[in-house]
Structures are given as C-alpha cells and as structure tokens.
Image (cartoon, rainbow, N blue to C red; front, side):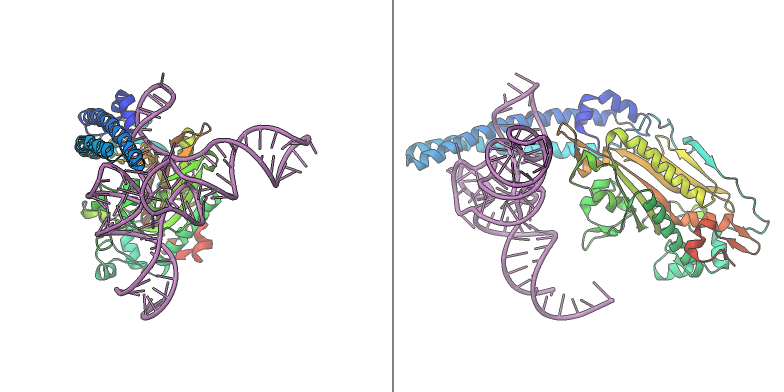
Length: 423
RNA sequence: GGAGAGAUGGCAGAGUGGUCGAUUGCGGCAGUCUUGAAAACUGUUGAGUGUAACAGCUCCGGGGGUUCGAAUCCCUCUCUCUCCGCCA
C-alpha cells in the first residue's frame, strides 16, 4: 500500500512512475486525495468538538465533587447537542477512512526507475545470461516422460489421492527434492540468512500484510472453518514475522530463509504449459527474505540476485535474468528480477525465481518500521527472492542432463543425494 | 471437546466510573561522580494524528453498548494460560 503522505505531496511523481504499469490510476489517485482532504477536515471538526466535550465532562466531574448538582445538570444539558453531532462526524469519518483505504489497496507499487516500459513478458529486459544451451541426444524426452521412465515422480497417483497438480515424488525423485532443499538452505545459511521453519497456514492479517489479501484471495487455499490460508509462498509467514515491529537501525539487515511447501490454486492456464512440473498446486521452495534500511535496499537486491545466480551456476544450469517490465511486474513490487532456466527438452525458459524489492509497500501494511538516528519512526524496506523453487529446477536438471543411459546429477548435489546418476 | 482464569506502555506489574495516557520496579537514554567502568544519585523514556511550533484529538486485545464522563460497568469476538479428555 502506498503511503497517503506520498500521494499528497508527490502526486505527479507517483503518477509518472505508475505510467509504466498497465492500467490508469489518475482518477483513483485524484479521488483518494479528494477523500483524504475531506477526511482530514472531518477529523479536525470532530477533534474540536471532542475537545469541548472533554472539557465540559471534566467540569461536571468537578461540580459533582463540590456537590453542586444544579450546575452539573445544567452542564449536562450542553453536551447533548455535541453528542449527536460528534456521532455524525464519527460515522462520516469512518466511512471516509474506509473508502480511502479501499482505494489505496487498489493502487499497485510504484515501479523503480530501472523498470522498463512494457505491457507483457515480451517486454522484459534480459540483463544477464549464463551457460550454454545443451544439445540433447535424438531420443531425448521431456521431464514428465523421464519421471515416468525412471520412476521418479508419479503424477497419476497424485491425481488419485489429491488431484491434478499434486505430484508424488518417489525413490530418487524424492531424494533429489530433499537434496535440493538442503543444498539451498545450506547456501543461504552460508550467506548469512537465519534458517527458520515457519507455519504453513497463516491468518488473515498475515495475508493482508504481504499483499495477498484483499485482492488475490482466489490464489490461496482457504480453510474457512478456521479462517486460515495455506501459504502460497514462504514470503508470507517470513515477512509477517516482522509485522508490527519497530526495529533499531543497527538491527539491519534482517536476513531470514526458510523452506516451505507452497500451495497455489492457480486458476487459469491449461494445456502444454502446465504439463509435468511446470505448474503445480503444491510445490517446494526455499525463500530468502531481507528487511533493510531504505538507503541500502537496492544494494541488497543486487546481493540477493547474486546469491540466486550462484545457485544456478553451481547447479550447472543455463539461465538468464530478466528485469521485469512495468506490465509484467507483480502488484506489490518496485523492481523484480526473474530467473529462468532453459529446459532443453521442452525447448523453453522456465521461471525458477523471482527476486524483488518492495520498498515500503509491504512495510506500510505490515507496520514494519525502524527508529532512525533522530528517533523518528520510518518504514523499512522489504525484499524477497526464491532461492529457489524446486519443480522447474528439477525439470531442467532431468531434461538437460539426460543421456541414453541415464541422468547425471550435478556434481554439487552429489554430497546431498548420495548418488551421481539416475539409471 | 469440557471447565476455569486472564489480556494494561520494551518487560514485569498496579489501577474497579471523574487531573489515568495511566502508580511503581526493571530495562533504555542523558547527565553528575570517576583516569575509565561499575555502583549511587538526578533527569528522561509508548504509538498514531495534527501544528511553523505549541495546543488539540485517538489508542489500556478487536468490535459494539451504557454514561456528561470508561482501562474501570454491560454485550460480543479473538487470543493466551491452567486443569481434564484425546493425540504425533
């Protein structure tokens, strides 16, 4: 959520930045500013009347103590008019506040100056590329066939016990999952992130904190009986650890990592794009989150991008880094880098990480603040990145490393898997 | 699932209708003292909104109500703790 002061004081700048996104926000923002003016005016009127009411009440208290019943009664008379008019103002105020809040929720984050203009994924900017595209043998097949052939993942069995999008990993397929999770967590620990194991179900307030609610509730599984949501990413519990927190400057940076399964209802998209591991309702991911001083957050974003980059290099996967354009960037983000690995049998790039700086957008909702040197309380910056999401990494490992005799496991994983090949 | 107790400032813990935005202790910060530190002493120390700065206003788990006036009374929701039951 954008800060109302920013809209009030730097409207033109905000509108200019937002112009990189799809959608028009001028009218909404004008509307917000208008409502805000009314809201503040109403607040002032109300405050003045409440001050008067408080003054009279204190007077009555004194009169009662002095036993001056008659004057006390007279004073009471004076309050009745104030009471009804303050009530009216209160109602008006809460209605204005509500309207303003709803409108503010509907404005996405302002893109950073590096964000390219553009409507869709085609307008994203490639900023880095690494590794050669592998040339596969003539009988090479996509990962879902490999998964079947080597008994690594059983999609049909998943359908039986849960439904489409819930694969059952088996044998070396399951062990490869576990190996990757351990590898990612170890790398994050080495980079100074605190390892955590957060809850996989979160409450409504947490959903609001990171921006999944109120707009995107359809993407989350919702347990209505207890009003809990299955997390679509560890970003939600990890970032919400710092909801309603006032940090000290020396606490920065806060670096946390965690492995969790992720649950997504993902209404939409069918056909070839969703075959095999490309799109799932449940998948595993190691997330890295940082909470940082506003002056340093872009430096930190670069460091996080570098961290993810090294993971893919160590896994020997060909990949590219895309700077998302305004039209493709998430609602809450100010700058996002997507990592895509090349899946050689499918002959396409698969997104395996999204690493973003949210600036104060999440912090504003989370009330995640810090006290600066002058004792002023300010919003912190939040960042997060997948490091990494497993399924598509596995798809690429299986496809890219297949030979007529089996699949080679990247060397860095040998210590984790305990095996070097899948035959 | 059943029964009971509770929710107050960073923490502990008072406060049962009228200078309570909140006694006190601890912690934090500043100062005195000290070569320095500790101890002791003195002062200061919640958040939001608002203002040029004051003032004012709001906040004692959330929401609602009673009253001229509520941290204090009533209703309701949520959460926590204790005991019993069940259970990895």
